[in-house]
Image (cartoon, rainbow over all chains, first blue to last red; front, side):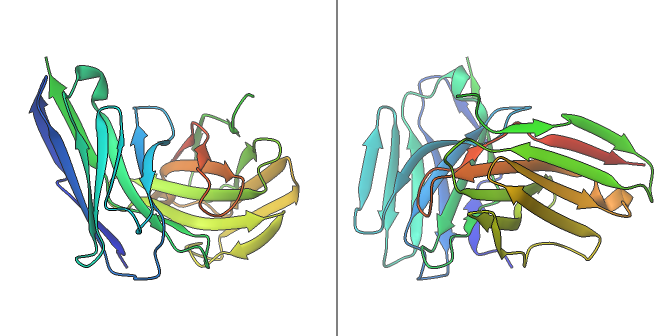
Length: 112
Length: 113
């Protein structure tokens, strides 16, 4: 059962462009939404996270937009760099379960 | 802080053999998670522990899979007998509690032939 749906599966962006990855969820009990970044041969690492009482959170070039009514959230990478090339996972967790559920992942390639 | 340490990094075994994956979490991080990553199914939560106690093992695919956490500094994931469809990267992750960041190890790549 896929509780967090992520798109696109892969993304190619030119250096300096904006990368946008979208996620949608079904479970209204989810109350914490992190994004993870994974490089080949490494485990995922936390990039940025948001709670549903906030519509947007920005950290450097990375921004999460959150739409609670639509049950959707997205990651925007501004001024994308080749070093951003990685796989990105959205995730969601309901505090009462403690289970972090991941989306399917998006492989981002930033071309120089 | 050495982070979450997993061993071995790679494991190649024949179908039917027992496989044991090991994890040393970060000191003081009282929640421990085992995930499996494949191209087809992405990152799947297998089981997680809180204060060494298994809380939810609903993601464990079959009785062939078992996990233990005998103390706060060590956990194992065992597959017996292993099958080719178990081939995947297995990750261990630790956190300080609900809504705290998960810190992942670098995974064990398991190949069952």
